[in-house]
Amino acid sequence: MAASVPRSTPSRKKKLSAVYARLLAAYGPQKCFLSHESPFQLLVATILSAQCTDKMVNRVTEPLFEKYSTPEDFAALSPGQLVPLIHACGYYRAKAKSIIGTAKALVERFGSKVPETMEELTSLPGVGRKTANVVLSDALDRPGLPVDTHVKRISNLVGIAHSSDPAKIEAELCASLAPELWGEFSHLMIIHGRRQCPAGRPKCPGCPLEDLCEYARKNSRKKVKSCR
Image: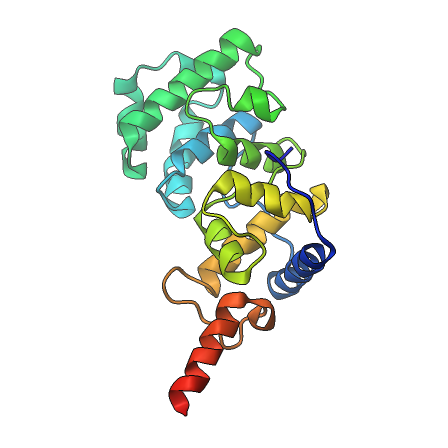
């Protein structure tokens, strides 16, 4: 469940429903962008994805998972063994520490299985709410709404969330969206950010959310004034 879920309002729920419908119509159903064959592999891939592109993570994990694929495999590694294999993802020392620590915790505390609750997932080294939500929604078929930089930025631009805190944004969105839509909504927002609304240069004309977006509306008014 989302943290500190606020009360939903009819207007926010209606707008959020419209945003979801527009994005789904524009991009079609989406799935996780990180390649994986098990919940544990997705957990590792998501830890690696911090400050790194999904494309690069997939390039790194393809040979990595051919060699090591289970919690036991990673728990037996030393940082010196893992770092060279994940170096291209950046922040490799911290990520190696988190991955090995998480693998050991899974072996020692969870019978080598990835737990299925937010509380248990976030008790693992280096696993925050975003990573936990990715694993919940994309590997465990449970409600989860990951808030990455695209979701955070676009939610505020459109006006369906009003916070710089990812946990608060998650709560605002989850309060007005059906749980079974949380994961795909996050994916749709991410692909929208990549294709239509990149940071610093949103392409407002022709955007499927243009008439719903607070930023686009304000930007349009500014252009009208400047033309007078």
